[in-house]
Image 1 (cartoon, one colour):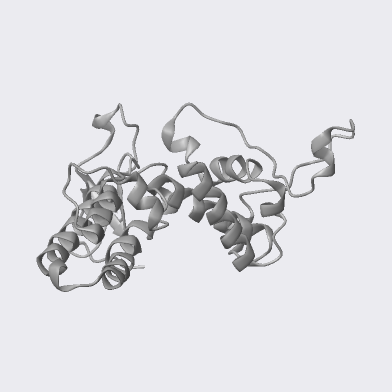
Image 2: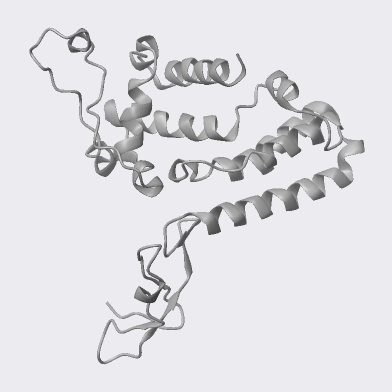
Length: 239
């Protein structure tokens, strides 16, 4: 494999507290020139940084959403409510939802601003009630929705093998515990005090999955699961 130094991005992952461990250049081949180490790199539309904090990706997503909202406000008085909702789904939600399973938490401001745009309200007006009327899930609930949908697909053989291998069904204890009768539960992996580790799919997915009501976990189709899950998350967010 021959790499082009002018087009290849090299990202070194390091401990957040140890900045000195990131070199300025990296030699991958003694016969080739050194590669300059980047602070951030893009892969499949996701921006990664050397600390895996995802701050660069969140920052770029927020800026992109604000730019779209700024353009929408310029033509907002010429649009009806239904058209505004469709534009928000297309231009704002699509950006917030792309790759959001990699994020443990993100800013709520973009959705709140989109809700104000749809309803022609100023920034000082509260949006929780308006967001509920539009059936918009908060950002963190949208992230949980994506993770849980991936988990459902893993359990039912609809996801790639490399994701399916990250979760396992809960083992029976043989001690007649109440949970032994529930075959839909997943084995909980170790937890961590570190935010990046606790956000890993292998840790976060079983935690979220086991917290769902049993009737949602036992959904027979993807569409049924999505409908029940959104209703459940909506109730948790607003009731």
